Image (cartoon, rainbow, N blue to C red):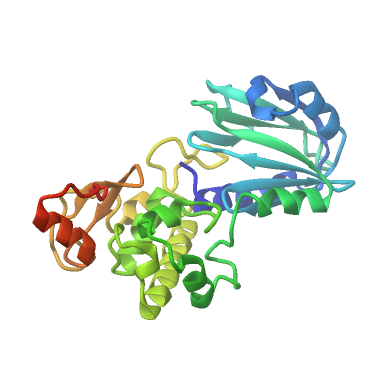
Length: 301
């Protein structure tokens, strides 16, 4: 579940605690986390190195160690990061021990938890390997200054898939998941089933702004805690209290009062006000097939 705002919240909280400190030990209890390396191989590559920077790319935390060694960490659906918890929680997959952080600062313990065990940590040696890794996996994120309306228009040109499906594809747009796609589309007054390639120029600009507004609101609220996401100190985010449509099926739209409905788009539960976000009309070919009684493809609703 953690999307860009949740991962950025973790990064902001964790960076001042780990940057400049040495990783004394990393214990990996789930071999799937370190694949394709064995846990011992990954540990040998990282132990003893100083953390120079904790960054983020899309939904990835990027640990940059001395000597141009990097770890790309993905929390996937249920991953979490806890700093010095009072008690050992369940579902711990990785335990890190960092050296003392100066006079009066003791060794510190960091735990990576994951109920469903989908999270990963991938070793990348050198800046070229780091860039190649992300070039193959993530596009620009909406908070990048290069993510202009023109960039979005070029990205969507010719695509017949529903706009929500494109927003969820990290290869096209990094950092946006189910929550922020719903919130952005509502802000942009776009129905999630609208074919991505049929947006107009004003709609490209509206969608870009909607994405930025939704993500920034999530960052300001320190993420949304609707499932497993917690801050590094175990506290909850607050963005779930500000949702405009997500998970609000049956409630009135905050803009027009129409009842918000739930449908399935791109395999994900999706929330929409079909008064503010007009459902797209069927194409002429689909209308002709419907008149002839021919079956049409399900639209995901």
